[in-house]
Image (tube, rainbow, N blue to C red; front, side, top):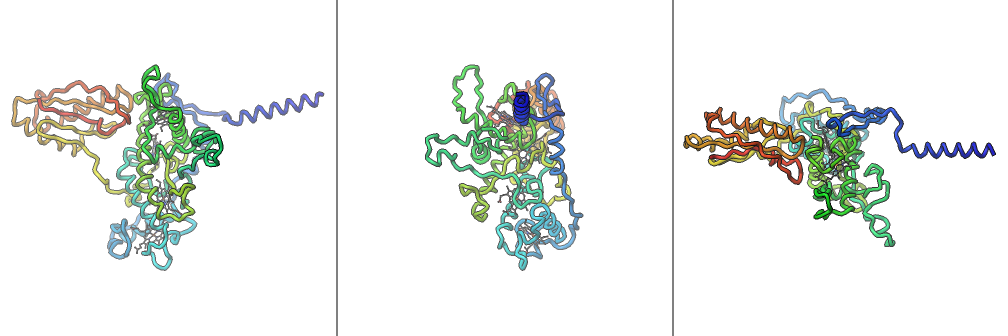
Length: 453
Ligand code: HEC
Ligand code: HEC
Ligand code: HEC
Ligand code: HEC
């Protein structure tokens, strides 16, 4: 009898600890991330962080190579991207990418050992496209990767195929087998892609390949006019689970969870995350998906598509890939030339619209040039005045944004007085209330408008 009670007690204890296995054992550190009182704490587990650290150490760098001597393009036959490097720089680059992408396989992972100029192996063709993609990220996606940027190592970390890739999921099993359950849209699978939740396991196709906008909350108390379905909400939550998981952060890293949709209560990291989504989508559509015709069949997914990237491909569990360490200073060959210089504004004799960088009140030289025609007409019409209004995007803290809008207006006033238009002829209008837009962070809303009056 007693023995039986003991065993059941033991079993109970065992069951109890099994239930608790889903919880994390202390110590857990909570770090305040939002304003005091909002409960926007980040919960860190020091053991998880310790496990993660080795994966985020920088590899050994090759010693610098001399830029002197003839260009590699004049010696080698088939350089379509790297022709401008010196011979030494090309050799250093090749040794570097070998250590980042194919350390076990060596040069012949991409090259025909007899003739390095040949494009016989698909891996070389893919690597060239990767080189162009890396340059494009570093030149044109500063809104996300800032000056830190990425190298092949950010995604590859010594593997020919990065650890985190995804394919479009085939239709759920139930539907495929013609069973009565119908298509469950990939739900209830405890999928790893969505942090082991039972949310739809392929949130990537709608958001990181198609133009899905994560906008599901109604903005009225009663459900009037909100046409978004529960299914759409579940895609969004699935994507959000992936984002949190990839960065090793909680939802509060980006949101005030009292109102997920509200941009003004969100952290600056949310705007960064928004650019992350746009960037991943563009890279998948322009660079990775088209490789389907280059890659061998065994690299393709169950629906015949090429492997694609998501937040985890670069971040690999860290809030910034490699904790924000940059390798670009010693790899300038991976910084591209911006494809199209971001528009810095426009101007006529009657007015101008000048754009600013995120969080900045500095008037760029390019933007200032759009004032030229206006300055000319102000000089020609001594009675005319210039009315200046500053705007900011809706992302971030409203009070700080108001101030930023004012500082931007001041920057333009200063530029006008530097050109000889005295302060008496400049009217500063009240900073325009923060503009709401679909994205929250829209380059066009970070602007100053100047009008001739
Ligand atoms: C991950 C793939 C990859 C690896 C590994 C690699 N290369 Fe390359 N290599 C390329 C690509 C891509 C090009 C062409 C670059 C371009 O078009 O500008 C190239 C071009 C070259 C060229 C110029 C060939 C010509 O005549 O046009 C030489 C030489 C070269 N690599 C040497 C090496 C050496 C030596 C190694 C090993 C230390 C190596 N590569 C490892 C991808 C690779
Ligand atoms: C933003 C992430 C990212 C960066 C940066 C990146 N790659 Fe990749 N790479 C991928 C993904 C995702 C794949 C898988 C798709 C594929 O196999 O085509 C891949 C595949 C490859 C492959 C094909 C491997 C195989 O066996 O099929 C090669 C070679 C390669 N990359 C070389 C490079 C080189 C060289 C660089 C730097 C110049 C680089 N990559 C930078 C994400 C990246
Ligand atoms: C790295 C930043 C980041 C993290 C972490 C994050 N989100 Fe988001 N969230 C965003 C961004 C950016 C959007 C808007 C995306 C868009 O506009 O396409 C968004 C949108 C949403 C929306 C839709 C809001 C609306 O207007 O309808 C919900 C709901 C949401 N997130 C919930 C969550 C939950 C739950 C978590 C934690 C599991 C989470 N988020 C974690 C950045 C983040
Ligand atoms: C091409 C690689 C790459 C991809 C893909 C990528 N990121 Fe990033 N991300 C970076 C780099 C590099 C930084 C560091 C920039 C810096 O030093 O501030 C960064 C920084 C961030 C930050 C700022 C963190 C902070 O504390 O300031 C957030 C948030 C973020 N990424 C979210 C995302 C989300 C969400 C996705 C997927 C939708 C994503 N990223 C996809 C490379 C990437």
